[in-house]
Amino acid sequence: MTVVLPVSGRQARRVIGQHRGTQRRTAPSDPYRDNLVARMRELAVANPRRGRRYVMDFLHKERWSIGARLMKRLWRREGLLVPQKRVNRRRTGTGENGIKSRGASMKNELLGMDFVQGRAADGRPFRMLVVLDEYTRECLAIEVARHFRGKDIVSVLDELTAIRGAPVHLRADNGPEMISKTVKAWCAESGTGTL
View 1 (tube, one colour):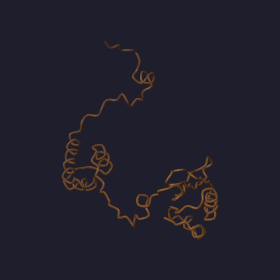
View 2 (tube, rainbow, N blue to C red):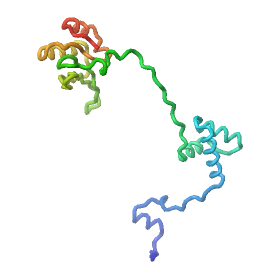
View 3 (tube, one colour):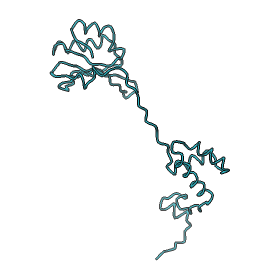
């Protein structure tokens, strides 16, 4: 049983907190647009590697009237996305010093170093130098600063060497701090190889 109240639709929607646009009638179906979408689907299936611009040009040649915005909206609504091509990127270099081929077999044999970047509460960036033993997965040092130089890395390595002894190898990326002359001189002096 429905109850009809003596209020307007606008007042009723305001009371229940609905926007006016949610209670409008749905638009009647447009046969021209339905035929257009059907033809658009046919062309997309026939040309799976082509995108909406190609299909739109084809539709224009067939004398369909469609603009770029409508085409984009219908294309997206129908889910007619062109699958992305997978690009096989060639790997450069060799993997002889990689983690899989040159793993650590005992404690203090291989130390890994890398930087992690973050932002402070005031928005200024900072960096953290993280050093870990790759065999035990133990984090040996986390040094925080706004910026690092080679001498800063050497001071952290000197502290670790005083506690644990010099490692056999150091693994790091090719960042400017990691390949600086200061770090190279420290490695040569302590007899530590680099990976």
